[in-house]
Length: 291
Image 1 (cartoon, one colour):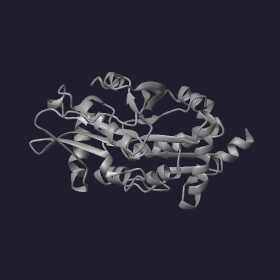
Image 2 (image 1 turned 180 degrees about the vertical axis):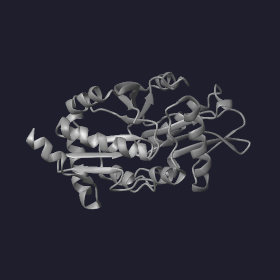
Image 3 (image 1 turned 60 degrees about the vertical axis):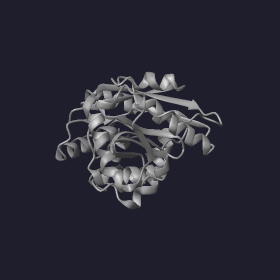
């Protein structure tokens, strides 16, 4: 217990001098839980460089074994060696969430991470949703889609950013009551500043010059977002956009693509992905706490 208390008393705001140590800690935690290092340096750097993220106020370190960060949307990253350390880090995150006026704080516990599991139970986190991890092997020649009448498809350009961001907020906010829209500056940094951003991998669909749907792929083959304006649903646009992305990625010699989708998505997205050949490979849970 003395060692745990000693660690908790070292809690302080993170600085850029801590960056490499934090990345190493998160990599080790993810590798222990999943067998792979799902965390990469550029992912952590992108979060630290968000305009609304304040290094030292929105993230904290506890010695060499503890770290927590609170994203502008309320997502909690937490690594801790002991329950005491986890409690102290969570307490700091809850205080920051209250300061920022966030309605919820969310955590995706790592599989087999007992510190995470006990933290959820002690503090009354509630299961918010299951997230399906789906993937699909690409053939060397994926067929390009037949676009519905009146639809013009093209790739993304930077002047499209406001319209794309607005469409995402409209679509996700229309069915997900827990969705927290990011300030546009944060969204721009997180999306177009990502190491895997490639504007030619983002496909936009317009009707009469108005954006009605978009599919945003990372260059490595991961589908980040796909949304459609409500008035345009049920016309085959979703399938066409995905097929367009598959054909383009196959042309670039990508061999496998993946995505994550809320299991409770009311737009029937999981069934659409299954019809297009995606299979579920795993599940993640999102737990929420009212700060």
